[in-house]
Amino acid sequence: MKKLYIKWLPLVATFVLFLAIQTQAQEKQYRVGCIAFYNQENFYDTIQDPTINDHDFLPDGPYHWNTERYKTKLDHMSTVIAQIGSELFPGGPAIIGISEIENRQVVEDLVNTPKLKASGYQFVHYDSPDHRGIDVALLYRPAFFKVTNTRSVRLHMKSDTTFRTRDQLVVSGIYDGEPLHIIVNHWPSRFGGEKQSLPNRKAAAELTKSLADSILKTDRNAKIIIMGDLNDDPTSPSLIKVLGAKGDRQDVGPKDFFNTMYQLFKEGYGSLAYRDTWNLFDQIIISEPLLNAKLGTYKFLKAKIFKADFITQQDGQFKGYPLRTYVGTTYQGGYSDHFPTYIFIAKEIIK
Image (cartoon, helix red, strand yellow):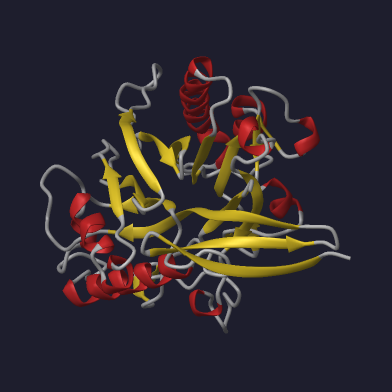
């Protein structure tokens, strides 16, 4: 009979988790990592930027966004990030993609909060042309992940030259000795209706697939993680037909992609809710080599939604929903309108 327990061991001034599975014959040890994504719900600073439309989130704007509220948001976001995956991986995820942040300064302030500074987070950020002035970024702990290359890729729509959305962020590096590639997304919204706006997300999915496929052409065994607020569910055409993200691991072959959030969605779980319907827009998708990794290398272990009580509405009409910063223009003092999602990866320690 198998016995599952957790053992902590120090490694170079940090603590690295080992998951030990003991059988009657032998003990196996696994090093575990955590990788996450979090939409931070309109995380603006309080300074006017003449190049974007940020008036709503200024002190004299309709949201009355001010220094006090900004500092509260910093504390809230850092509190959440520090606890994601803490059941197996302390100090915050080794890698976390974030969206709906206004600029580099917001990310700089976030990683320097007291709750995150001890983990030494560094980040990758580029300005996007989005009409709301929001971007994506990647935070990482250099004790685990070393960045080797980054680029920001723009989505162009031939049918609409005025179309603007978030760039897709591609970050390559070395995770605990293994090459790893991350693509961070925030696909176009459903503004105007799901069906009417679907072509925009299909175009975004085509771009994401081309970026991932180009990596696989260079290295067919490349481990790729596609993450983001995709504004579509795991069963949507943009995911199934365009990106080719499969939900059944038995169907995943070479050069295919596996949606780690698919089964959670089919079971009724979501990362955001609207009119009593749950959506799982915040997804983490992996390439086949991360699903069926060779012995002694990292592979996918488990997918989860971070839904702690303190970030969940506890009463009223929206009980069970994410506890938001705003409902309309009314300040709630909450966290985000999305729950974070995350995965654990693990590799067996070969002695």
